[in-house]
Amino acid sequence: MKSVRRRAMGALVLATAGAVVLAACGGGSGSGSGTGPGAGAPAASGGTKSKTVTLVSHDSFAASKEVLAEFTEKTGYTVKVLRGGDAGAAVNQAILTKDHPRGDVFFGVDNTLLSRALDNGLFDPYTARDLDQVASDVQLDAAGHRVTPIDSGDVCVNYDRAYFTAHRLAPPQTFADLAKPAYKNLLVTENVSTSSPGLAFLLGSVAAYGGDGWQAYWKQLRKNGVEVVDSWEQAYNESFSGSGAGKKAKGDRPLVVSYASSPPAEVIGVSPAPAQSPVGVSTGTCFRQIEFAGLLHGAKNPAGGKALIDYMIGKAFQEDMPLQMYVDPVRKGAVEPEVFVRYGARIDHPTTLPPATIADKRDDWVKAWTSIVL
Image (cartoon, rainbow, N blue to C red; front, side, top):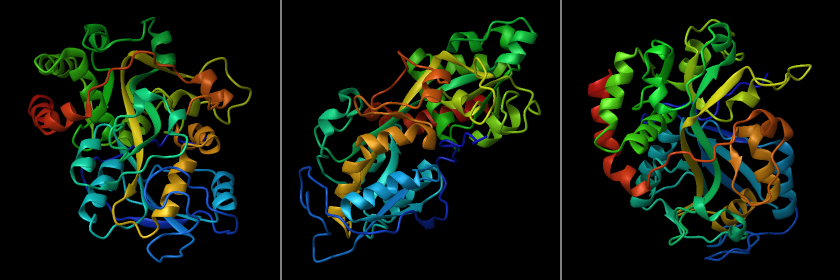
């Protein structure tokens, strides 16, 4: 079974990047047709004739060989991927190297870290082709077009169905439920200073309880026996009791902070297909993450970068993402795989916070959380 490795990260530490060339055939003409310098050109501007476009991203970036080959066939550009650890590390590394960018496009900055990237001038404006086909509620930089939304996902508490059935206990559904005595010593979450899902769960609690109330909530969770580990891998694959990918039943916590898209991963490759995933989602505990791509300032191949951004919001790439990175497409009309629709949780009312608020308060919230919980 394909493991759920989506954005399991240490958010604030730097990591060494590796380089992987994912597609290597050429030919065809350019497709970039958005607006901005270099749009529509088949090769790089500024005298560069490179047919390679370099995508800088986090370790969880994935795309099928077929989709990348189609991009090459349509544009003539080959995609080279430089992975830079988790999302937070990759963003920090891009900022540190912004005067000498390592690639042409950065993918993977989300709404919890977006302001950091924009405030540091990481991206040049570019209005992607077909941007009008992207849902308006995820276009958080609509005035500047420095980044283009690519996907969204919801960080939610997941639960082990077998545990709650065996104990004849209803799974928790809300933030408030998690602090009730019935769920004492059942929840494992990630350290907010070393994990993006952990940070998203904290932000969800801030959205739910407000700037003056979230601290009291976390004091309740601590009193109720919440366990904190450093990473998503530790939480989901080692502490959670419902993870098939992580040697099922070895963990002892039936509640874990993960994603609304985790349940489909638990049934892929299982035959016959079960009626439901062994993992459920507490739909009232979710915080929405939105991931963006942007044209790196100083890119050596801006035309290729723009063509890649155009392609990433195209139908083929958008429909490829769910089973590659366990995220939701943002393009209107993009069709998700049946297994994703059947077993994934649809979150109609996730919590969220404005990027500017996150930028202003994030470090203070992390510091306060650390003093309360650790």
